[in-house]
Picture 1 (spheres, protein in one colour):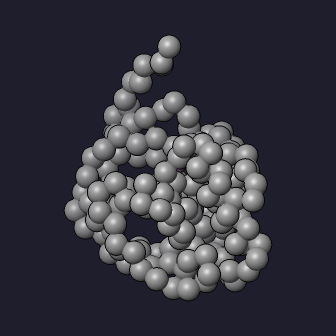
Picture 2 (spheres, rainbow, N blue to C red; picture 1 turned 90 degrees about the horizontal axis):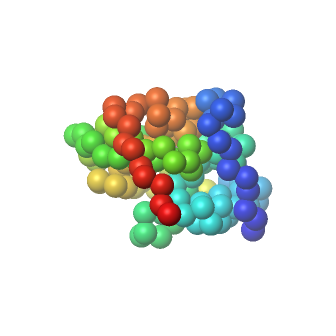
Length: 154
Ligand code: NI
């Protein structure tokens, strides 16, 4: 496993649309492991492949309930709406309110290449929506309704 460099806003790769994963092979598995390690080391709750420079439809999430790996995720249902503050590892120090669905249902492949569905509410629905946006080159800043000023510590 290895920690990969997180691409920051301004890097063109973050605005590109990702291609689907054709086969969950060893290379993909290694990428998933690296993405998880990179996310944890950066204290993030989610990371998408383009953030480490790979234009494939893969994201990892952990909102404190264990790792969730989404390969080729597709939203099959989304309901309601929520307005909360979010940030992004690619846009450090910036936080803003974004509208997201209250609940989502997603179909994806896991790190073993098996299809599964996951339902998320609240923060998990937000994290899934944020990471899936990355796969289409959309950053949360594109959707910010109101920026939140954060005072620097120290
Ligand atoms: Ni992000």
